[in-house]
Image (tube, rainbow over all chains, first blue to last red; front, side, top):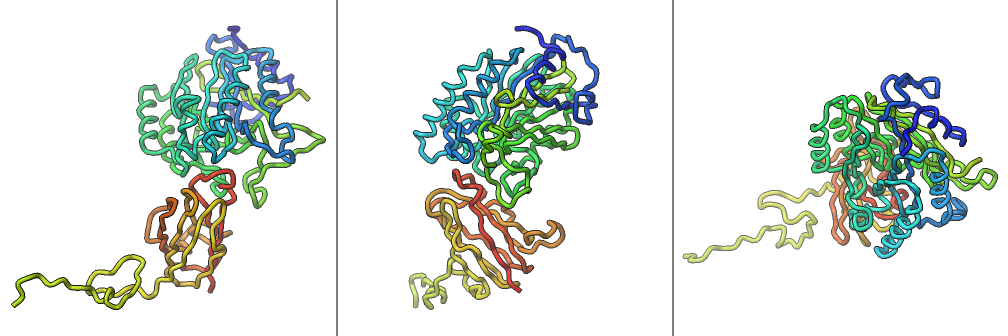
Length: 303
Length: 141
């Protein structure tokens, strides 16, 4: 696997992406805000976040290419000049259905499509569309645990499930699990939390919150280098709770309006003059063990 | 001389009163001031909506989920008002999301303190239309 340095990562921006800097000392948007750091540090790596693919959704006014968008996103990831170390999906892999068989069929189809990703490792996570109606039974049959951890080049990744409880809670047991996991780390160790719903109250009126998210954030707060990547809201969004940065990702099926910008949360209609507008994925470069990340938003297709 | 215990039947049962919360303890009176409102929940609507009540009324919403589990969550403050100070709806329970099990009536009790419109919604993910499963309670002066 080839090491990636900042120059290589920035080449990806030539695909039409916008770079956002997240982490200690990165207070403003833009490339100029990126601090120092050893760009050839062997601990540098990047990964790709894909989110809210909603496989199974059909609605031509919203996405006339509902059966093709995910495949195009897979092709787009595979065409990246530098291969990511891994890919993570932050939930709503499939679109909700009351039919348990259809739910499983969609998960199988989704899994088959993403096996075409030319990466060594893919991590999955459930969204409420995948897991809220059956407490995650079908999801676990197909993709494994709802909450888990993994480590990569000095960064500790924690997948937090805030969807299998239909009341949008993480729950005491899982929060305790999180607490015990964090206690094994030094409080300046770089930690990335991957979750589906926002942990903070972004816009509870639209279910853009986690019921006990404040308790989860309180558990994370003693750790200085925590960054959260999540999905659910179908748009890029950046927010701070204290020193913890939260970054929401675009969807790969349909965009949603900005929080509270319209009376009703509904998919933004497809624009034939700008196909796939508002859809995309992101590349996230981790700079060594400093807890700093460069976020590159990428379109589904080249412009 | 009575050799056996005598079963005392509470007056409320003798009177044939139908008390939703069960027959009160001997010596107390049923609360005549509680307004009982039957509500149903099914994908993806609450019925009735809007629900209209008078200021000062003590309300019991008896909510039954007809088709699957749902949830009920209502704003404590009128729509558009700041969520600060005394709430407009005063609840006896600390619960903020009442779980509605299918086929079972769940009672949500509060005093309608302040006039205004209070939005409520399903807070237990129930499917594609979950986000639109909402209703309104109107407290009239």
